[in-house]
Each structure stands twice: as structure tokens, then as C-alpha cells.
Length: 238
Length: 271
Image (cartoon, rainbow over all chains, first blue to last red):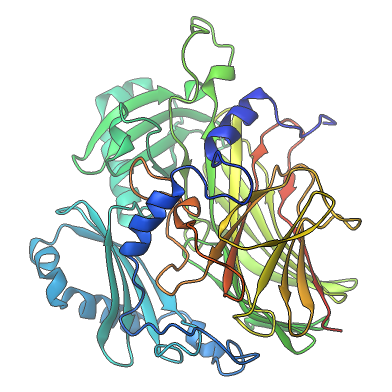
């Protein structure tokens, strides 16, 4: 148990891929373009101001910690209802092929106009349009304060995790490879590394099957757009 | 249990998030604001199949044919309660998370002398031995005020001012106390000093804060684009602005696990 934690070749390979390529201080490879796109779509809340804070202690002294409290069930329902009633999302609400990924409190720093307001951040994945809706709902005003539509992939909702398990468990190729005692252990949000992988651009989950002791046996990749298993891989070959 | 800690010169609020572990917010040291919000938005895991010596498998096959994956550390993966415990000279929050072959213990430790330790103990074992963990911490420090922050990086045997957003890996260089990055409030000369774990292969992303660029609910941005936080990095100036810092560790699994990743953070100048 005394082996060094110095990463081996494999780790270095992984790290090289994980890191931006340019020298310290420079924008990572491709990041500038991505950022421009990102920033162009990220104008911030409609009421954004340019001066974000000026006075010492401005971000803290006037901030009510209760704004960070979890949303009540009613607040969460109101946030989602307000969002789906927004005209900009009428098509999404009408088709009804979306999953609510998350609904949590959001607190904006003073002196922004939204500071001090009870806000909810709602993240939804719209399957019909294959896009993510990331919204800030002002619960005090009953209005959507910020709406962003992107092709980013948010984490899986609990419903999607359950659906992926259900699809994978019913697949013949998966069932053929399961050993006695194997069961779904975890559902991971997965994306492919290269364009050849279907999961590169399509919303996907990887269901890990194995025994209760943590030993993994099979990984099944589920395409959540088509509700089908696209890969079945022995865990030791993942 | 209250979600406010008032102990060891710290006042800290905390909450269990849906996906970013235990998040802390409105943290003061000796009555002065240090942190608006800090969290662990995600831990991605890469597997390196090419390194495995499997019978019948060609050594010419390309490695890492699979991409990374992750699952949220939060309400759905929490094991047991969030614990708050005092220790000699401080207080800590801890929580255990589990999902399949992955086990983590997240820690936030606060020392009376101004140190703060946002750590993650990784217990493994993963789906096989050849894999690397990439925990991502996000810090929105507000040292006395949100703006007028200055970021410095220790490079070339001295502290250098960072003018623009960017990526700042730990090269092995550090000041005499081991600190590599620091965020300074010029008015008060108070500073947040950041020291990486020597084996984290750590890197820091510095990004100008924008409302609307809240912590993402996934590292995955558009297909083919950089993941977050790199996707947020542009050319915007940092000096005098509100800065968000991301500390990212890269930890390869080995037999000597568990391994505790994460930086040492020290608040100076608020005594």
C-alpha cells in the first residue's frame, strides 16, 4: 500500500487530453471561440448591470442567507409553471418531451437588480429540440428573469437515470452478459470522445451493472434520444 | 442541525446541493467576508483501457475509446447525514457519497488560523484500475468586496499579476510557503492564498464573473467544444473585476487509495 501516487503513463495521457494545450495564462485551445459563442448566448439576466459590486462588503452585508434556502415544493412548482408558461417555450411545453433536470435556489450578488430577490434556477432538457433550457425564475415577480437555450448537456435527471436502467435491463445483449447477482449499480452521464461514437453528440447514459460489493461487470450505453442500447462493454474493457 | 457554523473565527453557511456536493456560501473569517460561494460542481472520471493487458486484445488498439463520465454528488448519492464536527483548532463538514463502484467523502475544514480545506477523499475502486479522477472545485471569493480583486500566480521565482482570464497549471514552482496562486484585495492587502496538493497535478482556471455564468450542471458543453470551465475562458481582463476560480485536480487511481485531493487555502491579512 506504499506505492506512489505519481500518475503513470495512462494518467498522463488522460491528463493531456483533459487539459487545454496552450501555455499558462493563455486561453486554452479552442476556448476563445467556445467562449465567444458561449458569452454571446450568455448575456446574463435581462436586467444585468455593468457595475457588479463597488462597496466593501457589498456582496455580503446586505445578503439574506435565507435566499439560499432550499425551494419549498410550492416554490419549485411555481418556478416550473412560470417557465413552461413563458411564450418562448410554448413549443417545448406543448410537445411535452422534456425532462426537468434540476430546480434549485439561485442567489445573485448585489448590486444587481435581482439581488435580494427569491430566485430559482431551472434546468430542463428538451428532447424535441435536443437542447438545454437554463432559466432563472424570479419567484417574487412571478416571471422568467433569464433564459438561455444551448446545446450543452446537463446532468441526467433522476427520471432519465431510471429510464436508462429500465432500457438497459430489458436489452437482450445486456441480459446475456449478466452473471448471477449482477444488478444496476450506477447510471452515469456519458459522452463519447470522438465523433464516431454515437454518444459524442447525443444525450446518453452509461449504466454500470455489477455485484453489490462494488465489482462492476458490464457497462451498457443507452441513447436517450432513441431509447436504445448502443454499446455493451465488459467493465474490464471499458 | 443548523446550516450555519459559528466557530473557530469562522461564520459559514452550508447546504447540500443536487449535484455539487456540500456547497458553502457567505463565509466570513473574523467577521469579514471571504467567500460568496464555493462548491464541487463535478468529478469526472476517465478510463484508460489501452493500458490494460487483456488476453486477445491487440496492443495496437487505440486507448481511451470511451469518453469521460460522471454522476452528481448530491442528494441522490448521499450516504448518511452531513456531519459537522469540531476538531482541535477548527471545525469541519463532511459527507459521504456513493454510486456503484465510486465512493467519495467530501470535506470542508475551517481552521481558527484562517486555513480552509475544501477536500475530496476518493475511495475508488472504479470499473477497473486504469482510471483518473478529475474533481472540479469552484470558488467565488469575495475578499471584502466582489470587485477590485487581483489574481497573482507564482512564476519565475516571483509573484506575477494575472491580467486576463486563463488557465494556470501548477508547474512545480511555489513560494517559500508552497503557495502558487493568490487573490488579493488591494485596498486591504488581505489575500486568499492557494496551495495545491503536490500530487494533484493541479490547475487553476480564472474567469471573470458574469451573472448568467453560474456553476454549470455538467462539464459537458457543446459537442466538440471544450468542457466547462475551459469553455468559459476567454480574453477578458481580470484586474479590478470579480473573479471566479476553478481548481481542478487530476488523480490517477492506484493501489494506495484512498487519496485526498484538493487545495489548502489560507486567508491572510484579516487578523
